Amino acid sequence: MDARTGKPIYAQNADTKLHPASLTKMMTLYLAFAAIERGQVRLDSKFPVSSNAAAEPPSKLGLRAGQKIELRYLIRAAAIKSANDAATAIGEGIAGSEQAFAAQMTATARALGMRNTNFRNANGLTQEGHYSTAHDMSILGRRLFYDFPQYYSLFSRRSADAGIAQVSSTNKRFLDAYRGADGIKTGYTRAAGFNLTASAQRGNKRIVATVFGGTSTAQRNQVMAQLLDAGFGKAPSNVREVRPEPPQLLAQRVVRKAQVQPTAAATQPRELTLASSAPPQRTRRVMKVTPEAPAPVAAAAPVATLVETAAAAPVAAGRMALASSNRPRLRPAARGEAVDQAVRMAVAQDTAAPQSASLAAPVLASSSRPAPAPRSRNAAPAPVQTAAAEPAAAAPASSNRDLNLNSSHAPKPRSETVILAAMGEGDISPEAVEIVSRPPAGSRGYGVNLGRYRSQAEADKLLLQVALQGGPALEGGRRHVANTNRGFEANFTGLSKASAQLVCDRAAARQEPCTVITP
Image (tube, rainbow, N blue to C red; front, side, top):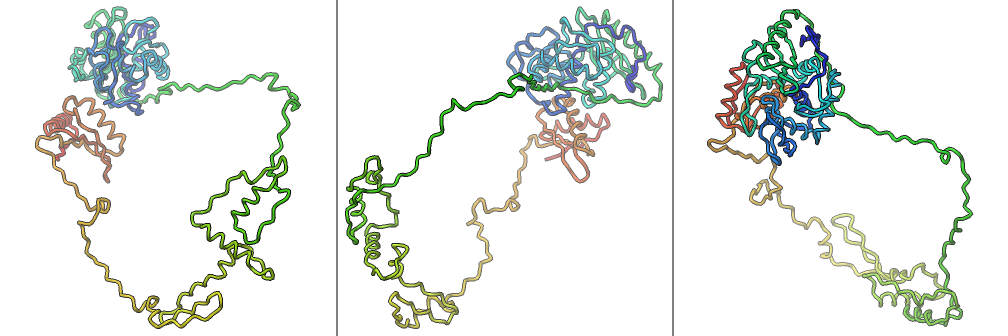
């Protein structure tokens, strides 16, 4: 098909359902790239290897059950070496199980327009119900090129570092033999034969083709070359590029709605009766205590005597007696003698005098009024009136010195000197601290600048692409996008001097911008 438009150029048995073999890994990698883009996982996320993944037959990377390996290495092993254990580990790490991942693969295939495809595993080993067609695999190959261009160059690599081993491409022969070929994926099982989905570009034309059921690697590559040659000959030179629409579904979302069927009990009115309910209980009120014959108490008797007398009085049957209640505690500031004195003073008042509303009123009446504050610096304090209304003796002139502000000392001028030795750690302003650190010789304080871009997403995509292709040179490096006034700069930091220089030398060979950042 013409990759620019997606229209088929030549087809023979294109919709026949056959075993796709390791062409299945194209969908496994598609979902891995999608998970990275939506932030579910990262290239440096470590995936655990299950016993199921470690037991997959060759081709395999050699993973061991229980170990953890970064996703970037699993992607390289699945795309370049076509490792079955790596593909299974990817599926289990993203979806939790290979069965759940296979369901996501099938749902994504439907969203991409692959109507005759059904997946049962992540690696493509022969299994009942696992099938696809040449037309559907060509659609998937085109979507890999347009949907994830930042990762597509991975399919043209001849070798790569897969963490625990250096892997070589299973498609190296065709990539070296056919001019313009840059991918994509091979596949072989006894049931499927020799399969290949390839893509090549010459000028402004790009052709995607798929071969199923080849009898050998050489025969398959020969048929693929003939298909691509025919495509380049028949495809128009100038055509409007029609990019595929984003897929409708990348992950299934299950929404359960509760359905309640109407019943007779819910629709028909029913009479409710309260005959069986117990009557409400009456609220208990506080009962008054009325002694039958209270004993006479002297007017000047203390409070303790009153309480003892009330306790000793007979109480009617069924009544509550206050004698059984605890006496409330006095406040901490109160004293027993002061209370008794206040009671005696209140009782001793003349009956003709007006009754005070409080027992403490006589005590407050005998206290002296506070002296008013002076209205001027030179004015003498007003005389103090006692409870007996007697004029106070004239205060000597020296008694006014404490209230006269003229006699106070002038405050000392504020010192402008800052004593740094007296400051605590929290008193030092952050702006006044300058931390200078220099990396030691031979440290990983170098970095590379890969140019300036208009958006952060564009810079992030470039860093991911370079990280996927960088190999050992970028091991331990950190991706960083710097937001400057002129744009977003894509940087790798934490590199050694040799690694930074190697990355820039490779970028210069590809005619891409790169500058070494020194510590």
